[in-house]
Image (tube, rainbow, N blue to C red; front, top):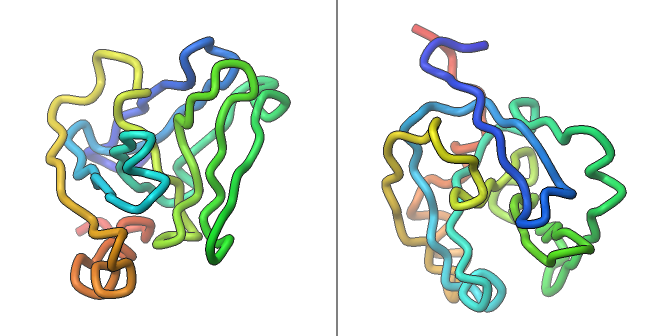
Amino acid sequence: MDSGMVVHSGGCHCRSVRWQVQAPPSVVAWQCDCSDCSMRGNTHFIVPSERFELLGDSENFLTTYTFGTHMAKHTFCKVCGITSFYIPRSNPDGIAVTFRCVDPGTLTHVEIKHFDGKNWDKSYDQTGIASSSKVQAEG
């Protein structure tokens, strides 16, 4: 595990979907106002996909919704309906983790930034969000 990283555990409300993710204890989370995120109240931090692990038989309880460009894969629990993580359009090589779905005790700070999903292309270019799913070299 990279230095400065901790293992965060989390999942959905009914606990049918469980996962672990390696991320710093302090994260930058994105509050998006696209039609989907704003209706769900989703605020998420993004990690490289190799730092995310779905646990047990969680995959059996997931279903996926797509719309628009169909790039984002909005996964949610078939039982309770919670989206605890998904593959974002901005970072198809990463995982967006809903920070409120992380079990208590490992996140020490969450800085919330705005992503203008209503003006997606402009916001994508201006925020640097694409770098969130890249593994940073230690140094």
